[in-house]
Image 1 (cartoon, helix red, strand yellow):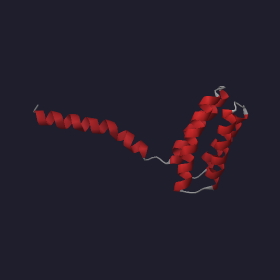
Image 2: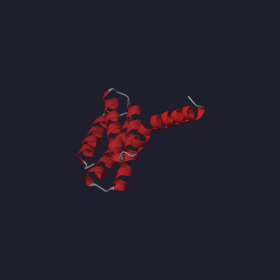
Image 3: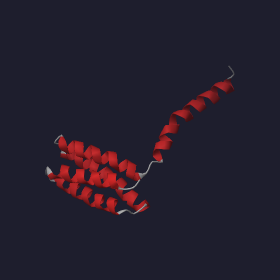
Image 4: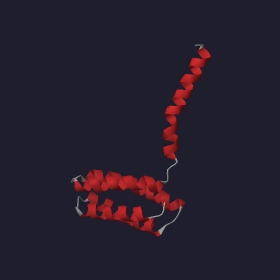
Length: 112
């Protein structure tokens, strides 16, 4: 094969490998907040408050961005609950898991 063809095929292969990441970057913030909230709930059930706080904080960032894109009362309530879960998680209180679970329910009810 010629050198130009090899370079073209290699370039196409590299572009193809990065294409799924570009598509994933276009997902809504709400769709990103839900798995982080699920991870926060799982961490709380496993007795890992620092991991709960980490995932709840990431979920909060995405929920705030989702609320800025398209305001929704369910997302607004979920944001309040995520903030509360973070506060309780930092104090290592078990109620943080329940609060994060309620935030998850709110986010799942929000229209996507």
